[in-house]
Length: 401
Image 1 (cartoon, rainbow, N blue to C red):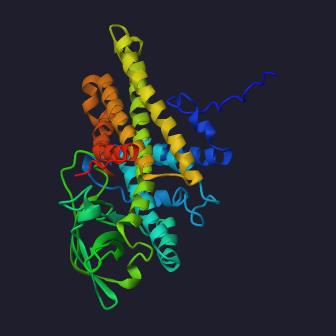
Image 2: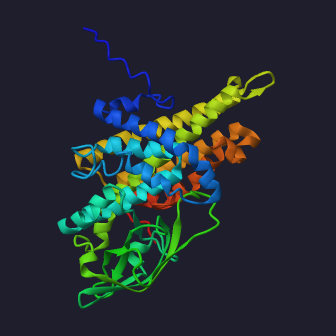
Image 3: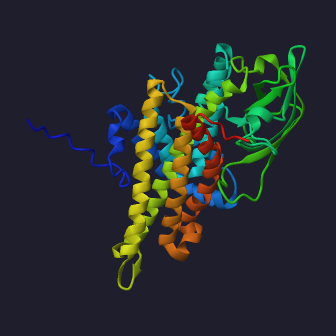
């Protein structure tokens, strides 16, 4: 007996060639559509102006407060109860980057890195103390791990130190590339305990003496994100602000595994945003008396982009399923991050190529996507580091220096 499958929704994204969004249940698709409309109407109109100035639109925080998008993935904190699936969480990250990677990064730092650190690393008292205000975005969080002289090697060589004196920890060192840090209400700072040599997490509140964030200027990517270099000079933090469930870098790795998959979804969003711009431009741009969308070489670029998008999306759908099933590993997120950001680099280059000279100015948006892709390609671990994580997994041999 032959059955006819149900018709897919008629309002899927044009880049969703294999109908991945239709995998969401109806209630989660409604949330995704709400987010799509919010980002289109409230966020997109402002991004080029602030990207050009290298400033963060503080009014955006008020807009997010009314959006209902914060903390959806956390049981008991978001408006959507029970907690949203990992597939919805990923697609929300995708939607944000589809509009602007800087906004997606701001949100990912607050709602992912910082929130998740406290959610998993804090005890119940700490969760009750900080997370409700973060869920409502009355308080904004940041996450400080990377150091001026250390990136991927911080697991074994973190230079920022913590020394317990009575019931107070004293932090010394420096952090770099810390998103949101110039205006965050608190920052999760990672430091090496000099007594046991283990990495621990500390919540440093804004205005704490000795904690000095300075904005990094001159960036060519993610210009809306306010990255800072932070000096920590005898910063005193009470034991009550130490994340009680973090006792080694192994505990920190759980946080990074979760957030690394979010960057892979962001990379997909950048791909989709760039492809949509290129496709629309190709349909309207006239050369030799006809739209360039009808030229074979332009169609070749567009189809290559669509193939990269479709392959990456399929990988991330299965990654979300592994997360929901609780069998999600470091090498799973590493392969996804390394693969999708590499494909993203290709897609933004092909898409910008279709614009010709118009592709290097902000007026057409594509230049912003092209530049921002470089940051996503590098942060949360470079492609080379992701390769070595997966390489160790499949061979049983470590190639780390």
